Image (cartoon, rainbow, N blue to C red; front, top):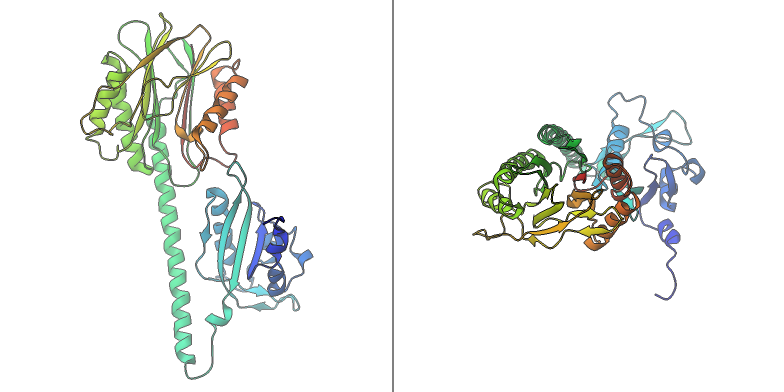
Length: 408
């Protein structure tokens, strides 16, 4: 089309009752049909809190409309995902007769409007009144209609109750999984004499949680340390369990391996016999503090970053191989090495830090490089906080994130 579309006009003529709400559940706008069918004036809606305009019926002690609707809207804000509610009874006060409440039934769908960073900035609240359908009366089919309406409403409420129990169960599993993950991941502030910072940020909602891990170990022989991160596909307790197994296996292998490639070879063989380790990724670095060299190897993982003291950013991407269990017969993995000067910073992370839906990964890597360069003089703890603040979406990421920073 040669002319720009007037989306404000489109919104006003949308069929059905549609309102735009802020994340605080304040009316930002309503379409014409919402004004007409709600019986309110536009000025009585826009700028007002949703539940100040439409509270529960104070004469009905079992009324749950506001509670259920608020829970749905807050889920959308927290998860950034659409939520279709079960059929609701939500009585409405007659605007012409204050104190008189009318029995109403609604079908409601709530959807997010996201900004460029994936943050929920508005909620599309679409409601359809189905009162007449539910309260159909008259004629020879009247009795049957009353039975059907009662059955429909009863099943809708049962479905809503089941969904709420499922959400509570998922949230409980998430809390247990996060507690297990926290217990298994070290809260390391330094390794040997080197200042270090570690961070773990769980994803928003109940999905994609507890698959990321990190590890810092002293290596046998010489003044050497190993730093690793990994990512298990999955979520919840099962992912946390697999994460713990792989982290422990790599930690043990690193202490006796000749180099990072051999450590990942051992881990790959182990991953083949661990249920849930499919497509897991990992990267490990061996740092020789006397020779000032970093030897590294990656199994399908985003590359570590070496931030040199002069501000130059080097991605350690010359030894990348498929994920841990990609080959039926594991082949020797590649490894590479690079040098560094005193004051350099090594950064390892998982893909939740850099990946965004629909965005090329190179954009995320460039964003990370810019952030590290901007804060290169900060100590590891301050640097870690700055990177997370600048790279993670304000409302939280949809994948969990691990970050390790070591000042060399």
